[in-house]
Length: 492
Image 1 (spheres, one colour):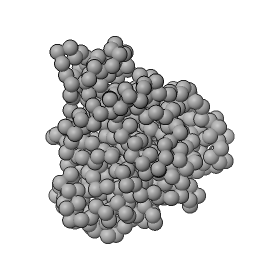
Image 2 (image 1 turned 90 degrees about the vertical axis):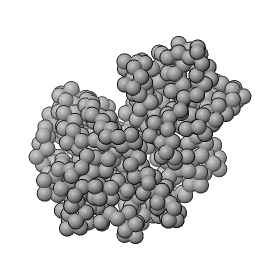
Image 3 (image 1 turned 90 degrees about the horizontal axis):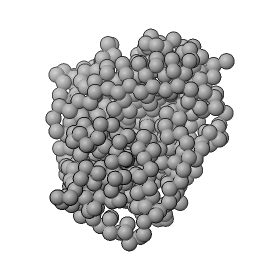
Image 4 (image 1 turned 180 degrees about the horizontal axis):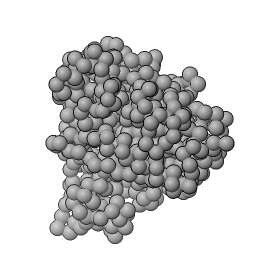
């Protein structure tokens, strides 16, 4: 009996494949990094073929690590960096332009034009989003305008748009399935979040031909079967799909309204399940689809910060303060606090709740006594401060405090960061035994899609707590530090 699920977690800096068994234990995993492309300040691109090649290598090596033959796979689940945009030729399957990454800010002027024309409220009401270059819609239009003949080709039906989930399903199925799921579709500025249909009026405003758009499907169903994908036999169902942050919410078993999680990856993302209600934020958050199962839609409030783990990468690659990301905690622990140094990691603008694409990183409070340890600690604290602002906005929308926040992602393993985050938030941070809850969510969705798991209880049963962090700083100390942070943010 086929008893394994292949979870593909296609992220911003690398692709991870995990082989997961029926008990939701990881039998094998492998990560392949791929190059980041920075054509000019504020622009971030990926080579789609490099992404696909990294996925192929990760899958092959994860299967080898697990000692599992690909023929034993019951299903494939996909989770992905969400707003990253690809336009490809339907005939060849090749992209006509490098993928424009979610961090990219090149379409900020177009977003400003739309705001100046008075469309902000319309987009927020229909899509739950703000007009920001973070989302896919303005990226699609930019590609169609930048590549010679692309707009005419799109009108003739020769081109297809997709976020990375769509591209992966297209390639996995040999070009048969051009689909996305409701969670990824809700991140485009093109989907009516209430009807889950592409909105013709919004597509017109953004100059996106509706013929390039994929079909919108649920998050747990069979989209197609593998065909001619390197390292995999034909005929494996591709059966689960969700954007990375929604998949993490699912993998954290946040199935009840009011339950929330924060994922610390390249950026940091807080999502709170709001049940069947699409709650409109009045504090700079986003309304998004969490998942759609069996025809029923679950919504979430989301606050995203663009730079979290990427700040640590910058200390490593840009400043050379550390040689690996794992060294950051030990370096930061050499000093008891940052001694007034404050790092606002707005390296690609500020996300929620500010939504300032023009903001840039700031380090304040430097003195002759500042050391690399102080900078490292300020960087970790900057990640936590951004998340504090998001949770502050979330609690205002809710009208009540959260009882606890589940945490995951690579940086959630950093005890110093987690403790400072708990100090700021004043709520319990709960870390699971398995930090790769994004991939776990994708695996669970795929398992549900092919009947390997009977219901959500299987996911809940698999979730295990590792450690809980509670506030240790005094409220006065927290207030003083927050005040310093707010002064620094005003300068970003």
